[in-house]
Amino acid sequence: MRKSKCIYFLLLTIAMTFVGVSCKNKIQKENIKDPMEQKSKATVTKKDYGTTSEGKTVELYTLRNTNGMEVDIITYGGRITGLSVPDRDGKFSNVVLGFDTLEQYEKENPFFGALVGRYGNRIANAKFSLNGKEYNLAANNGPNNLHGGLKGFDKVVWKVEATDENENAILKLGYLSTDMEEGFPGNLKTTVTYTLTKDNTLQVAYEATTDQPTVVNLTQHSYFNLSGDFSKTIMDHEVSLEADQLVPVDENLIPTGELMDVAGTPFDFRSPKPIGRDINADNDQINKGGGYDHCWVLKGQDTGLRTVAKVYDPETGRVMEVATTEPGVQLYTGNFLDGTLPRPDGGTFGKRSGLCLETQHYPDSPNQPDFPSVTLNPGEKYSTATYFKFGIK
Image (cartoon, rainbow, N blue to C red; front, side, top):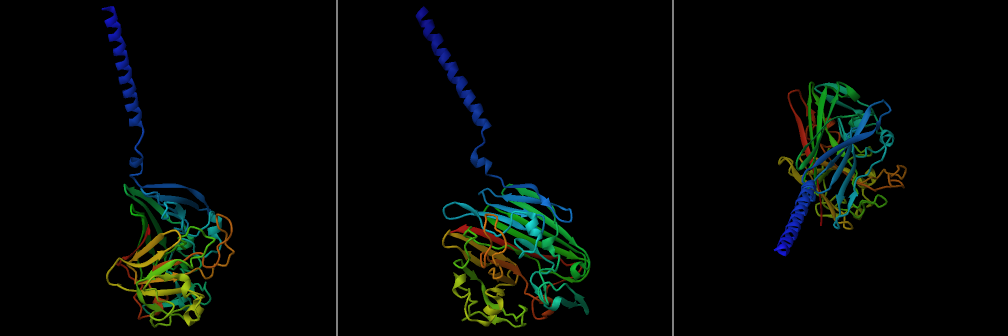
């Protein structure tokens, strides 16, 4: 009998020990979040980035989606300073050209990652007329006005509202451009919203209102190199554009007012081809631009948001698709990068180490009555959108 009691108490002890361990393990498991659960929500984080020469605080916001894609944006110029996407092997790399200090962004630079306004691209002879009145602008590109003038939207500090919606990371930037700032009429209230979605798409939505008739043409000026290696050029990147026509330019890169068919020219990207195939062709327009620095006339202009361009890097497998509501896209192949600007990883940015796809209205539209209008009147709302979707193949 005594032996039976000993066996009973031994079994009871073992059972209680097992229950205790099980309970402890259960508690531990409850305190450990499922990795998949941790990745189920997009995030927006911020940190200080520096202070401008005018004493204004600049912040860096990082948008991260549930796949691990990240976009870094600073409030100075609304600039995209980093954009990390995976290649076909799942390796994440930054694919946009930029600097690692605010001081460098404040120096003269080719609009790396910037929001451009009030008017993206060139306005001939730095002037235009609207409702019978002539407006004079800064001539900051030879005789022309380029990308908003001496202090365009790329050189101001934007106000920020950051939010997230479970699967989307959102950064809303606002700026009030006052009447006659850089020579443009009207108080222009502008909002640009960056949204990073769960399908690795960076959406850029532009809105603006004015209290006087004015002209508006906003765009995003990131330089892409899908290899993630900025010591390499983008000459092997394959590009396709949904465009049958081009806006040809004169020696000052101002539109002639005509449209040119791309068929049979180096500007035919209706089927994918490497950037480098025809970029050095003996062609009048190529010679004037020093390569590609032209606006393509996009198809489907009355159909709203549609895919208009694709870029593919055969080495890494990265693909970027561009969709927009805009009538044109400026393909610029970094022709004026000259090896003097420093890369964050060492070395310098060389010629054609990045390409831009600036969705927009045509250059010099305020002086070209046959081009789609860029006039914004009181009571109207300027509203455009461009999506950059990243994938692999």
